[in-house]
Image 1 (cartoon, rainbow over the protein chains, first blue to last red):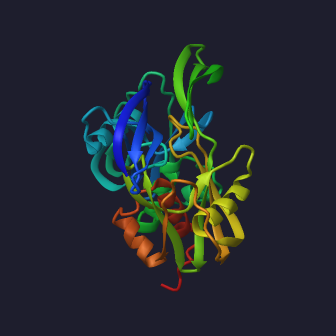
Image 2: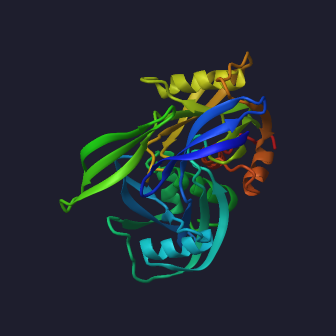
Length: 179
Length: 179
């Protein structure tokens, strides 16, 4: 697909809607809308090798509170790793001695250009939080055993959190070995 | 949070943008935008206990082709299970003898109300595909061993596919036992 035209339809605080004209491989023009988002850094904070800190916050897309890994939107030009360190500190107060990139994903690539960069944070040191205005955040530690139970029961409903925890259970089985 | 007002800002083919006024627990009014989407059914098609069928399709949100589990948007009033059966048939030609709901997730709940319902499809019978207009879909079988390699290398970048595969590796380890 070749992009022939891209125009702003709506600009909100967190995203833009763009109207795009694409040329198909057959040479036909098709019109699509896409939501532009700056992207996000998402962090799995390990308090120790068996304990993950999740946060609970009210989400407009769910019309309720969800348990999630900490995450936040990239500032213009910001490196995802720097954003991960900043958001971890803002939302939980912790500073990570080590931040490891696990994977990057498109949460809904048919309509949204957001990229989520997922990091594992270890060697945590506590400190003061610094929530964004209008963020109401509660943090709670979960054992790996409890996280498996909550995932299986679908009590965790946030996509990035399900993806990140499934990834850790698959590729980092030595985490949680205390259980 | 209590919703006090909700008004249409933009209506596109696949989503709407709504302007919402919320009242915080402290009684303050805040203005937010949210993207409304009908929701989607997503299917992990198991050709046998070691083989998953993925599809490759060009995605406007990624500006490239992604490998994904089959998925599609719910029709108005459509049950997610019925949608899963329909989309599996349309995109791969297969009919599932068994469709098991694994979990439901919000892919980007800070801006988007889309719910993705993830199903495991087994006892597959082949048939004719029926792609939507302007869908260009290539299907390819992957072994569980290969999927682990592709996930670890982050060659799979679609969020629902990472979440679904991580879930299966965590909770259905007897799948893929031929590897």
